Image (cartoon, rainbow, N blue to C red; front, side, top):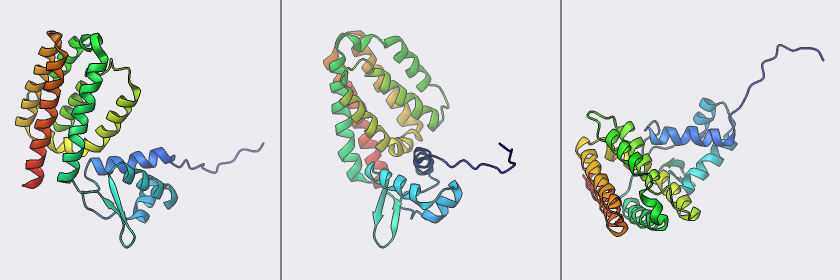
Length: 217
């Protein structure tokens, strides 16, 4: 078969397009409330508008975008309603996941302490703080055997990621979260699951109230 010098162009898969748009939203390249120009995105990503629209509909189901017949898609604004709806579900499901872990709940205690020490590092960036916080909460419930609960928590973490980025920009709030994580660790070290679950709620509830104040002001 004769060789050809024709360049074969590789187009991103649907998941790649979805991730690319999602990252633009998370990092503020597509700002909250901003109208999304599909043709522009298609040109930037080197794809047709079909995978763009598929990705935008998927992001709408996850709460990142909203659609309007007249204006098309836009980025979902940060809202008080979403914070009030999502955060109580988070602390309820995470508490359930920890209770389901039973005796396994304290297995990862050394790793959790290490993560929290990294979280407490002076001058930690918002990105690094978010990564530490996410890893802490994921490790905390790693012993949960209920996959449905874990999947729901994973989906909700995607929804709140934009909010958590806002939270992590405040070093004082990060310091408070470190202390609240320590309370969870103390309860686990004492094998007191009930107290650990209550400390989880305190942690998420504080985050919710802080974000409500930031969004309002």
